[in-house]
Length: 131
Image 1 (cartoon, rainbow, N blue to C red):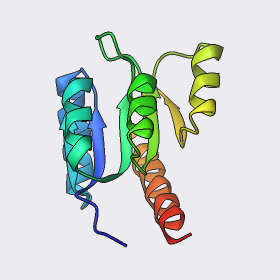
Image 2 (cartoon, rainbow, N blue to C red):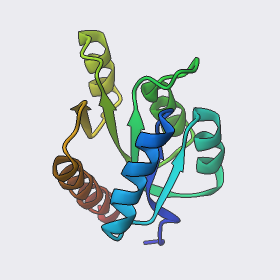
Image 3 (tube, rainbow, N blue to C red):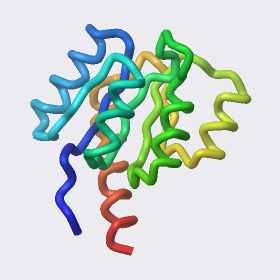
């Protein structure tokens, strides 16, 4: 098994929220890389590996978080994805399920709930790699 370049790839167009989540996860011991736009995140993912993608659904651009998941999966990224959103539309939830998103979390997310979900996603990713 190869060492991942980062544990968690974060994508959120809200820079303040992105920074606070990245600090929370880094303080917990994770290797984190954060981006505020989908293009930069996808460019990073071309050459790097990560275990968990933590993406906001609404990104203030043409692409949303599920578009990014779909693109990364098509590129062959082997990761679990956690989407965080205030969007509760049934079609969004169905698309997330179709893309096998690990967890679909509703905003606002409590820090401990986020940490617990990330830990479960990382453990699940390790089991996938071992299989």
